[in-house]
Length: 243
Image (cartoon, rainbow, N blue to C red; front, side, top):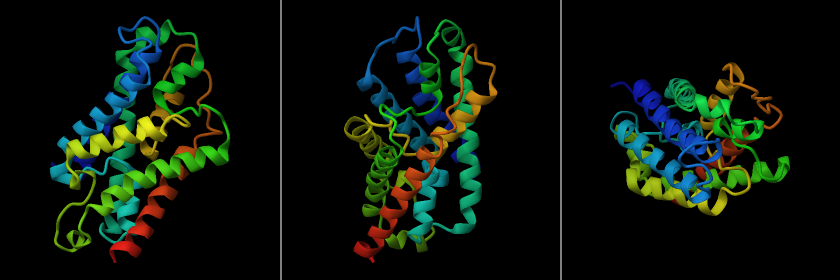
């Protein structure tokens, strides 16, 4: 399995679980309707676990453009590999979102709230304040990336090892993402991953979802730029601390 295929499949699994649990909790007449934030954050963590297990041995399991870019900034991932990783992650996220839409189509049809339908695909801030929303996304991603970089030996970048979320191991990184969701996710829904938000948002815009409303493109830059800024800051600080 090539790194491209690994990132595509890993990200698709992540979004299938993540968007799937949101659909199960917020859409009408599902078995998990009203399950709450604990259910959502837990399943997202499991989605990360599964994505890392599958992709880790072959690509390092970045499954997140912010991780890929941050590792490149830190000098432990080749810039020449960045475009193929980003493309695989975006396509994987779109595939995962499509699977969720097909699976939950009947429930989309009986749900009238347009915001809830959008929430299955992309993040929606609890209070729309672009400055604080951007800060929230940056902080959440900083914690994610800094933890990865702090526990990853920088010398691995020159020994042929594949660096990514898999460097921590599937269970630790799942717990990390779970904690980020529980502690820092209440403001924006913690995208902390540009592909996780942009890919499914594109699917929301493209698919013939009944009474879906708009895709909120006015907000879409926040869960893309915020994670990139937060991850880059983590990379910069790790260089200062770890050398």
